[in-house]
Amino acid sequence: MRQIGVLFVLLSVALYGCRDLGTTAPPEDGSPPAQVSGKFVVDEYTVDCQAKVNPRNDSVQAWFPVKLRYHFEGSPGAVSTISFIFDKQLGVTLSIDGWPDSAGVMRSYTPNYWTSTRLAQQDSVLVECKLDGYYAANVGGAPEIIDTWAWRNECKVAVRH
Image 1: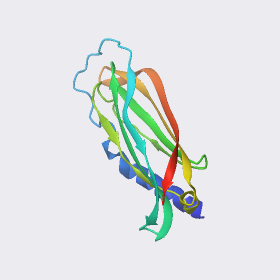
Image 2: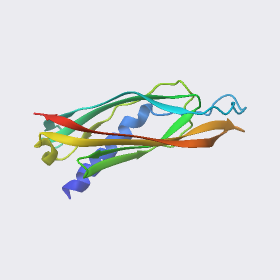
Image 3: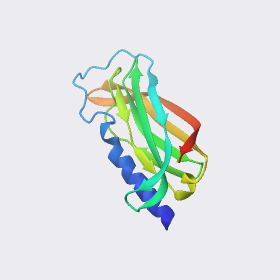
């Protein structure tokens, strides 16, 4: 039952943290751009882990503040899903639906995830971040997928007590 509660909290934090992802309005230009190969670029990715008291339940848990900044080069693109997996056991996936971002537009995703007390008691935690999406062109006022992409990072994060 506690795992369901933790997953609910992770999902609600993920939904709250996605307010800066992607654009919600269609691009203004209705003509398709020249087909240019796209590139997904991560400008900054940091993840930290602290053992601290969760104010919602007054218990010591692992807290993971994340900072992800990215942009697209050469072609508009979109992020479809963002997943975080903690210690290969707990995870959260955010699915995103919206208009592709123009090339060169910087986006940020800065959620904070609370996880189990067990992870707070460890010296380090394996954190995996996975993103996938697509490159697009505006054809007739609607995005048309040109190609797909995926990005993955896995790192051990020390737990600060």
